[in-house]
Image 1 (spheres, rainbow, N blue to C red):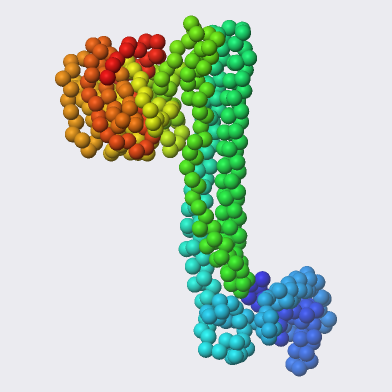
Image 2 (image 1 turned 90 degrees about the horizontal axis):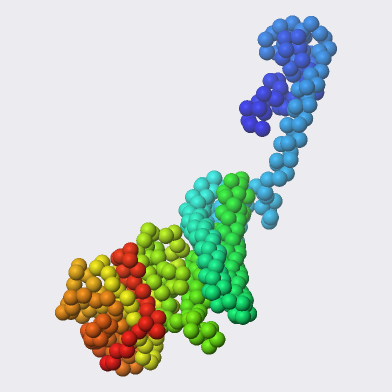
Length: 462
């Protein structure tokens, strides 16, 4: 209760809490013994406050006031007994030792243990340390927000995995239907592989989500416990301050959630060269594509065909911003890279809009503009040119291209481009390659660019 409540419950004669109060006809109350002494001394049965003569020589007891006073007295005693005392001197803790960072009593201040130490009143120390802890808590709150955003992105990724799995499953089923009944066993094996990968990817995603949940729970618990300490009474707060500060400082050092790299369904593994892999039993029904496009690298504005061999420009799709995906350049990579040997693939580019084909380094920048690490043939503003920064762009004396062959000799350090219609060599980059290279296709056209199957590739000699 407040000091005002204590005043209201005090006898105006003894200035103490009412003991066995009685009430006069004027409604004023006093302790029974105090009132009797007052009357005996003055030999007049008048109210000590308003001087009105009492109608009763023996005033009735004020039971309601007595109950309130007894409750107040009991609560005050309980509060006094609950107040922390010095563990050494059993005195009230009124000072805060700045050297030991702990509350002390007045006796402690003069003891050898705290000789030449600096002290502050409890109230001042509480104010300073509350502010310090509040400032330290802000980065933890920001960390919690970062983990929560990461958890939200992870949930979006999990939904995209589900959609990818559905699309891949449908495509696999269509392929196997086309190959008729005797390929049922092969179909079931491939579906099982897809579902196993989906299970593993979902399991990995779920485990990552659980780890994030644990971090979020830990940070939330720290914030909740710290805020409870901040709301505690002064001395109690200072007693808990060390532990709260240590916990906050530890949680500030938690590593930020890493990007969820490589968590998407590997559609290229399931759909890429699907017909070729069963070609030994269905030769006349299949074709083989030397390059399979990886949808996990495609810019959101590019739309890939179900067999992952064609790409066109369309409306931006809502896709996870996984580390493998390009976010500025309208391009997509092949699913497999090359770090040795000779490789070639043909691209149908019959388009008047801007496009590009070639190879990029595995380490090429995926987010933001690509500065270096690429070699390509492109159509730009009506001109055919070869590009590879920092080399200057070189315009080719070509009027029209419909089909282009890209031929990579990784060991020999050559990347060549050919016009298939006229069986003509266009240009060769000579470069010592030091890391894995991936095919790339870029387009700014709604008409698709297509990776041609090997059965449609005319021979070209270097």
